[in-house]
Length: 324
Image 1 (cartoon, rainbow, N blue to C red):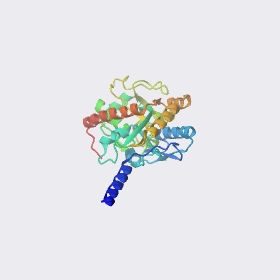
Image 2: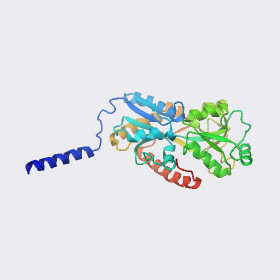
Image 3: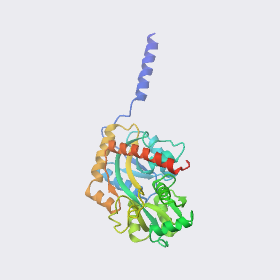
Image 4: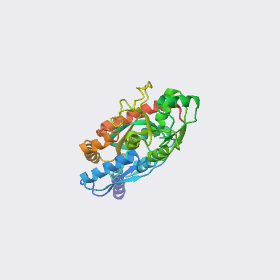
C-alpha cells in the first residue's frame, strides 16, 4: 500500500513539473538570441529586424542574430517561432501579413493571437503604389484608365498570397473596379528588383523598404495608401486626395515571442525595445525611410493584433480569396 501511494505521489509530482510554465532566467539573456524573419534579406522587415537586433545586443549584452526564413507568405518563420521553446531565445519580427495569413492559408500551424506573446509593435509604414521606371503611366488615373480597358493585362508583384501588398491591390481592384494579374514572390526585395527592371508593371511597396529607390526614381511612385502624404515623398498624393476613399494599406513590424514565454522576459524585452525605437537615432532612421515609430506595450500590441484579425476576416469574406 505504501509503495502504491509513493508511486502515485511521484507520478503527480512529475505531471506537475511537466505542466509547469518555463521559469524565467534571472540573468536573461545569458546566450545568443535568435530573431526569425519570414522575408528575404534586404526587405523592410529584415531592415527593421537588423536595426533592432544590433541595438538589443548593445543594450542587453548578448548577440541578437537575425535568421531569414523566407517563403510561404512568411509562414515558415512564423511556424518555427510558434513551435520554439518559450524561453526568450527565439523571437519573431513579424509583419502585418501575420494577421492576414490566418484567413489566407489552410492548415496553418500557428495562430496570430494564440501562438505568440506580443512584446512590442515597432513601426508602421503605409504602402506606396509604384510602377516600373519605364512605365507609360504618370498618374493613377492613367493607370486605372488602361486597366479598365485591358482587364488583367497589367501584372503586379507581392510578397505572397494574403500579404499586405496582395490585400492592398485586391482592395484597389474592389474600389476602382479594375483587374490585375497577381505575381507572388518570396520577399519584398525580389518584388522591387523585378519592378525596377520592368518585369512586372506595378506593386504596392512598403515605404520603409523602398524609400531610397522611390526617391531616386528607380521605381515611379504614383500614390500613398496612407492618411497623409509622406514627409519623404512630399509630391506624391494620397489615394484620398485622388478621390479613392478607403484605399489605406498600413504595414507594421512587431516583435513576438512564443506563447508561454515568462512575463518577466516579455517585460524586459518590451522595455528594451521601447527605449530603443523611441531613441532619436532609431526614430530618425525609420522616419527617413518612410516609417513611423510605435513602441507599444505588450497589451497594446495584443489589442492591435486582435482588432486586425476582426478586420481581415471581414475583408477576406468581401474579396472572396480562395484559401491556399
